[in-house]
Length: 308
Length: 295
Image (cartoon, rainbow over all chains, first blue to last red):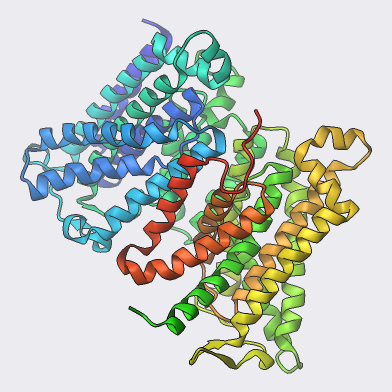
């Protein structure tokens, strides 16, 4: 067992002890960070590993959230099936949207992902009879076996740990190495006989599936859903989490999510000018810590091994 | 079936909206073309233009030509602010990956919007129309505000002026050369750093002018920055990044789609715009009048 794996096991163990604090605040914050952390890691599979700057990741988060909630609420599907269906719907949505997006590169790719996510947002926003439109979808209950915030925290922790384990397996596999190769130089990757577009599409689907799973968790956690979840600032926020934490490290986005959510909770209790503070932090970060927090720690040799 | 005069009025209001979009999008496109920076904060500069025109208009309350003083000073102030942003911050990020510049301008969106809230509050502000343009002119039996006609002509005038400057003057040639090959331009003895600042200043002035001109016909509120920026992006992408006439064409198309989309499907008007952009990006990723990017 390597040092890092041991450290991770200890971290998971400590996270499992969190509910012992019996603080509703920390259980709530912990669940929120785990969910958004998974969302950020799913985006980073594209951003940091494949070099695709997706500006529409919120679409898959929203697709997952609405699929799971609607199946439970309107079709009375049992939670486990609705949850799995959410992941599948994210992958399928990503297949359709990704099919068009991966043909483009750089800024054009980003703009097309933005356009598609806004279309998905508009559909959710306008389809009143199904999604509740602007008034949202309210009264989504915890499934019976998870009917306390502590139990839901453990469930979230379990799902996130398993998802991150799987994602880690993906990026460490030969498949993941090819994604990194594509990030570094798509043309040369093409020259050595790799179907770049196909690999990008599969990465897009995996990313969409995990984003949808985090979305499904989010919907149940909040007991309600609003179309804002799919609006472009949500995509931008998760992008910032990745960059803040460090997009060239596997756990960077999770760290970024933790910092942003903790700071927001903390700052908004003192001042309403949270965006000003977040904007300033982001700007300072760009000038002084271009590799993100984890990137900074790595260059200081605090962590020895990483994605790069 | 609505009658002809109604359609004409609808078309004219679409055209008015198109001119605001053009003013913002042309600055955005210019900055992208030369600096290769996608300026997310361009909508914020537009919003600053609107707030500053309110500020200057309230300074010149009892002076004749109140609006025109504001229209002179507000865009210039925005241009100066833009110059400082480029020179002090943005210019230090050119050596980095493109994503860093994008994120910095995104951080500016948050900072400027909150600063505007701190200075001007969250309420709705307005600027009154200039006295000589308060009337309306008859159009096939209906009435259309004179001010909007003025905006349409001013927008077209600025488009033609900019095109003339870009094609006929030495500065225009330098700017076009910078879009093609900045290293070569630098080795020919042009100070590229200052050129970038000047381009950013011009782009900021255009955004500030857009904000100033919109102030008399729309309410000035927080949030107008992010509302316009996505539309301006769509204009630039549909028209073609870096294409001057493409930006004008994109703005006119988007203005008309917005104006008539509301009539056809009121509940889904904005979807038309995203669908338009999606179709253009899939069929012609480089935009209607743009050129494919060389690698």
